[in-house]
Amino acid sequence: MATIQTARAAFEKRLTRRSVVAGSAGLVVATSLAGRPTRVLGQGTPEATPVGTLGFASSPFTLGVASGDPLPDSVVLWTRLAPDPLADDGLGGMPGMPVGVRWELADDDAFRQIVQSGTATASPTLAHSVHVDVTGLAPGRTYFYRFMAGNEVSPTGRTRTAPAPGTAVDRLRFAFASCQKYEDGFFTSYPHIVADDPDLVVFLGDYIYEYASADLDDPVRAITGGKLAVLSDFRNRHATYKTDADLQAAHAAAPWIVTWDDHEVTNDYSGGEVIDDDAPVSVTDLRVAGYQAYYEHLPLRPSSMPTGPDMQLYRRVTWGDLAEFQVLDTRQYRTPFPFGYGEQPRTPAAFDPATTMTGPSQERWLLQGLDDSAARWNVIAQGVMMGELLHQGDPEIYWTDAWDGYPDARNRILSHIMSRGISNPVVITGDWHSTFVNDLKASFEDEDSLTVGTEFVVTSISSNGDGGGYQDYYGPMIPLNPHIRLFDGDRRGYQRVEVTPDAWRVDVQMVDTVLSETSAASTFASFVVENGTAGAQQL
Image (cartoon, rainbow, N blue to C red; front, side, top):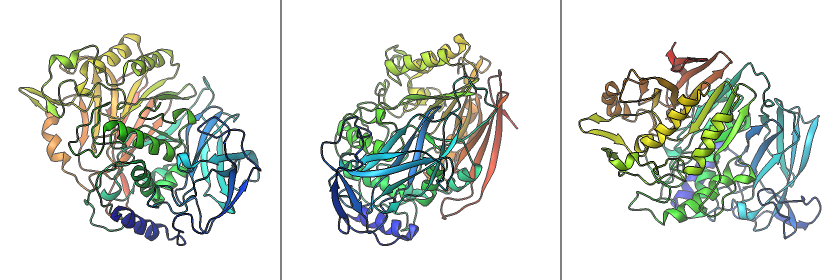
């Protein structure tokens, strides 16, 4: 209970909204068949019970709006009805009945030129979240969208579709980020991301954290309590994060492409194995709850709706002839730690061809997608570091929760890229709460071997707060790894990318602090990868 009470107080203090109504009190419910959609988005079948219309005593759009996964002719629109977003039962103060939600998509933010509109069903089985897959849109266009429920209107979001396949594209601007821990600091990077006006935002995992800490001595951001165990826990943790005004603004500013890492479920879980001795329930039960809440709170297509402990997350987004994103799931299908968890010397099991980070089906999908791509830049967006990080030399020690724990699987991908001449491969990665720029080598044991591609590892949005100690921990390892072109272990921020046919430019953006609600940001370093030349050059 302390968790909910503390987070609710923070929510009310930050957003200065009218007092929310606890539970479903204050909701005027009327049952109606009028305007019922032909299908329930996210389920694909007609709703079996009438769809309600509600009158709200306060806004149900406390968690904002979002869009995601832009295709040339479609984009996903998201919201969740939650007039009391941190209600103890995890249902956001909504009644146990489906509710009709109207939506509009327009060419202008005044909604004078409406392109499409309709009604979706917010179902209690999905915590009254809505995932509208709007189709039939024009490629390469900016649109504005909003939702309506009862007499309440949501904030306006802006989104865009991808350019048509094969279309010549002169520029793509996007930001990528990872690892936002609510109680470790404020999300001070997001106003700068919004100001950058990106076409896309890519989030690479650890959208929430499944356990609480008291690293930030500020009751506005405090979350107390133990590890998440059941669906209501996960829903309320997502809702707590979603009440952050800066995160809401970033979601409303541009479409997002998301994937997860471990903390959306439990720390460093590996497929069906959990390393926490104090895990409150089985990893299967944690996956069921964590995957469900993840889907409910992010702009994913109905095709990604989980079934029990399984969820289809890997997918592909193409941006004309300029870039193609292969978005990976590096948690769900991996072989559990082939040579042990933690910092370990490798054993022959690491090189077993059956050992996999992605699972056989996803690996085949990735390699085939790279073969089929006609894009100038081929981006692998994923959760854990691909470049090698030798921790010590005698004996050789590696961190096994990254690709270093799966060297044969990594070699298969890099060898495929090299042998097939895949155009301009770039890997973008989260997880480490640190910044790395890595040359991806044909052989990490030979610093003179061919550079196959480049990896950019982004630091955290807020995890570890200001500082964090990784500079002192990983810093001495860097000389053992000459393929690492840049390392910083203590700063928080994001990376800003501008892609043209000729070059891929990254600006490593760092905020001054996450311990106050606002912060300046500056460029810590800039790198460029030139078309046709593997490896990043610092500017």
